[in-house]
Image 1 (spheres, rainbow, N blue to C red):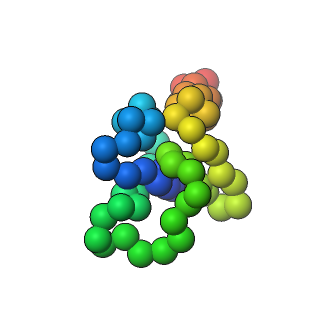
Image 2: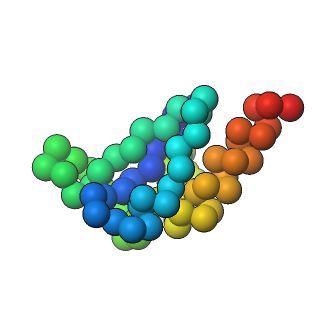
Image 3: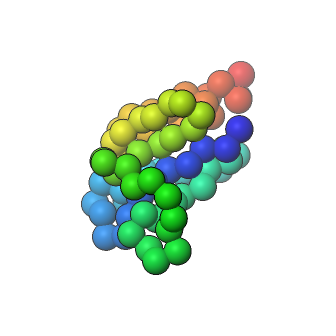
Length: 72
């Protein structure tokens, strides 16, 4: 499964998101010229399928949970 984390440059909260190795994550910068698509109301935000998490703490905890589950 691939996850997308929407962030922008020079964003203090976005810099707090830690992307662990071994999990397929794409960082999408919404403020760059090559971005096309829906701009989330809040950033950082993690999206996959119909699920969404907002904020660095929630995103980091989600990735930690996935990484821990893979190690079991």
